[in-house]
Amino acid sequence: MRTCSSIETKVHSINTQIVFDATFNILDVVAKWPAGSTRDPRILMESGLRREAPAHKNTRNVVERGIGQMKRQFHVLHGEIRLSPERESTVITVCAILHNRYGLLFKVLNSGDMLIG
Image 1 (cartoon, rainbow, N blue to C red):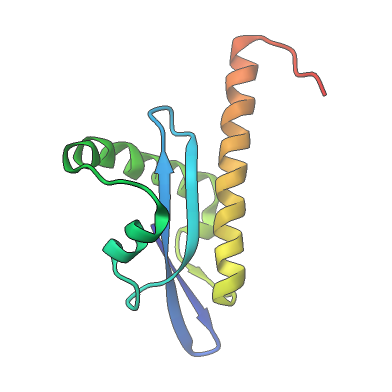
Image 2: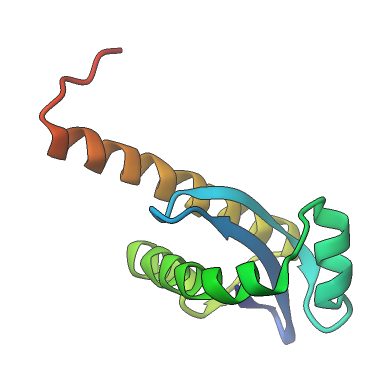
């Protein structure tokens, strides 16, 4: 996922690594790399994740759909975020955390179980 930011007249964007499971639960998110100066292979190498070509192909659809869900939940992810790159990274990470919390709450409410605590 790439988001674009502008501070005054400077425009920058952040490359974000995001990993979803089959139920759109986010397993890993790292929003820290400046777009254009950091290539995907480096991001993958630093992530500690191993990329298998067939698995990557099959899960790409899940990731794209998961990012779409996040963008619908959090309109701030749609376009320009007028924050510093550091703050933008924080916003993206918090949106990912809230996405997972919402998903957990939705599953619990649909199952009829009581929330305790």
